[in-house]
Length: 148
Image (cartoon, rainbow, N blue to C red; front, top):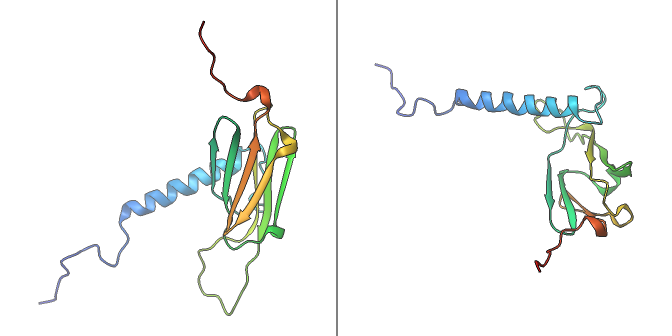
């Protein structure tokens, strides 16, 4: 009589993981298709993950760009749109049989509110994470109002 495993799913992916992968691919495709910087799929091959935070004084943007150098990344600000673009090149060390890492050109366009201090935008890149600080203009900062 053949031996049966007590864990029937061991060594196999759960069917739901495919649903999550398909959903993630759908979201990424939606983002590429309807973002202000829409480009043909053949031109931009992937979309780096971003986090956006806000406090009273600034917007902070964090972009995951693993394996890249500062010289591979370009930042532009024009008409209140911050554009992060670049290219992640594949460094082959031998004959490749399988790859999951993403390479190629990318571009992300972020429409920012009109009241930002564009002259004081700062960017810092360390350990594969690009941190961008976009200060709010003086009039756009929140403040408390004393009730009389």
